[in-house]
Image (tube, rainbow, N blue to C red; front, side, top):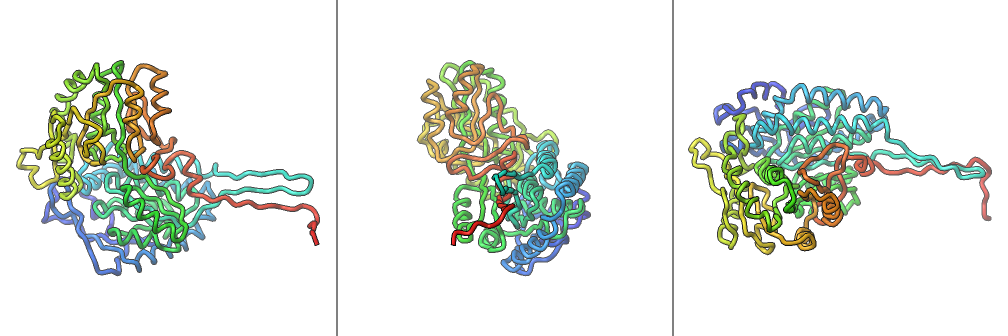
Amino acid sequence: MGDRDSTANLKNGRHYGADSRLPTQGLFIHGEAVSATSGETFETINPATGQTICDVQQAGAEDVDRAVKSAREAFKVWSRTPAAERARILRHAVDILRARNDELAELETLDGGKPLQETLAVDIASGADVIEYYAGLAPAIRGEHYDLPPEAFAVVSREPLGVCAGIGAWNYPMQIAMWKSAPALACGNTMVFKPAELTPLTALKLAEIYHEAGLPPGAFNVVQGDARTGQAMTCHPGIAKVTLTGEAETGKLVMADAAKTLKHVTFELGGKSPFIVFADAILEDAVSAALMANFYSSGEVCSNGTRVFVERPIYDSFLAKLKPRVEAMRVGDPFDPETQVGALISREHMEKVQGYVDMAKASNATLVVGGERPSDPALSGGNFLTPAVFADCTDDMRFVQEEIFGPVMAVLPFESEAEVVERANATDYGLSGAVFTQNFPRAHRMAREIEAGSFWINDYNITPPEVPFGGYKQSGIGRENGLQTIESFTQVKTVYANLGRFQGMY
């Protein structure tokens, strides 16, 4: 169950079918693959074919409790491990991840439907970069000393929280598992991680790699399952913190559960981000970035700039350059190295996205290109949609207001800087945004005025490990990556030392 050999032949991953299912996958607790006690299983489906990859065992409350107890036991060891040794172990995990990049990327493509050209280049590598970054920071976590003359001083130290719960999303399964576990482990915490039930496979591989690298048994456990498993984690009294990537409504539910035991929380939630193009922008760059900001990973990226505001003088030119570029995008088999747009994660999600496309077609917006099921019969079993662009959109259209999480771009004209700022901020979300302009002062005015946790100037969706990522408003609480995350995975202890005699009052 979940052994390395079960995915060793993934160089032929695109040939997997109903007659070549992987073995049933279970949980990973205390350094080994174990079976769930619930007796329930669910299927994980290849989004590109509709065929079952394997059955996965559902973790019940008893399994979550077992994982938490294991993590609490491991915490006694890991939290006392010297920071330099923690760093060495994490760097060893990075080496293994990079050596196995292709195998892991292919498993991610099989389970999630993303093009192999993406997963080979980004998904595993970018997560490994984050682990490497926090491995470097681990020995640098420090406290403070305060001199309090004449006969006292105080020491303020940073200590780990304990057991942290990580709840992942299905769009970047392994990357998210690494983004959450890297700072937690670097700070001396342990983690129980639940991947999304739609993409459960690669988190098990990460658990194996951490164990192989030298992490103590129980320091990183994986439990599988649906919302019931997640709720068992968020309500568990033995868990000190929950870090979630998901939808805003899910975040509200998790926050309510976490409040019952006053758990720490970090949420990276949804977005409906503005992508703003001024008339002085380098048009070719703006068009290329808009394609990336809307159609990379089939549009299943929380920070995507799906509201594309284009200044009126170049509006028609922008659309004229955009249309043929979208038409030329290759939709197809994710294992084909030429494929640029893969499958949406599930049939249900594809139908949801199609519903928004149909809504847009029925509105006063103009369909520029796409929004159809591909005609290739070889793709008929998968969850494929061609990238869609709608022009002449207005802010009050539902598909412009609501997060779609699919390959649907809304292009909106604007007349002035003040107008576009007001319209861009007229949303409950505030995850990200961008401006394309050659006017340096204007670029920085926009960066100051747009309500977003991340803002790019003449670029999009660049997230180096060194800089924090997270949202304003209903796009989240707290940050991932960067130095700020160290603070959210530690707690402060003050020790006051009296060097003289105690001075009583009575």
